Image 1 (cartoon, one colour):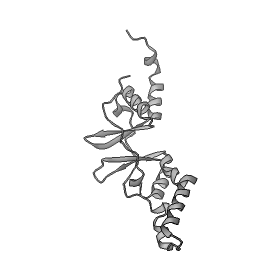
Image 2: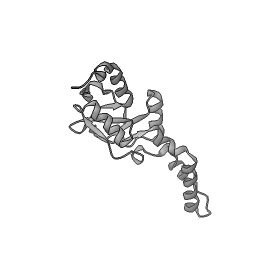
Image 3: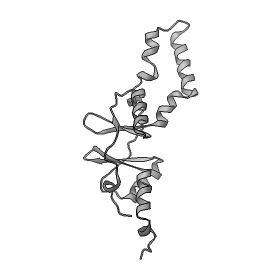
Image 4: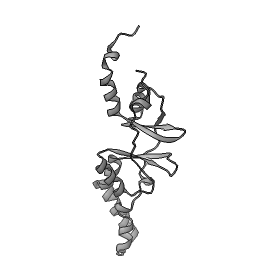
Length: 160
C-alpha cells in the first residue's frame, strides 16, 4: 500500500510541554478521549511521548512502595514536613521525567506499510509525523486499520 502518512495522519495532535504535570496531562488525556500525548518543546519539536500506561505506573503498588521506602530512608526516623511531602507528590511531577524514548517518527511521505513496520518493530501504538523536525501529525494503529478497511479491495488484488 503506497498511501503516504500525510493522507491518514491526525493533524490536530494533542500535545503538552515538558513542564506539564502528571495530573494536567492525565486530565488532558481523559478530556480528549485519547491514550497518549506528544511532549513538545516551545518550537514544536517532540521530546517524547507519554501514554496512559506511563502515567498509571505512578499509581501502582510497586511505585508507591518504592516511594514510601525512599521517604523512610530520607526521614531517618524524623517526621517529614507536610510542605516537602506535597512538593514531591504525583501532582507535582512533570511529564519530562516520564517521556518515552527514543522518539519513533517518520516523514509525511512515509508509506502506510513502512509505518506499520515501525509500529511492529518498536511495539508502539502511534508514530509521530515530522516536517523539518517539527510535529505535524500522528498516525495511530486505528488510522492504519481505518485506511486498510477503506482500501481492502486493492489489497486483495493479485500482484504481478
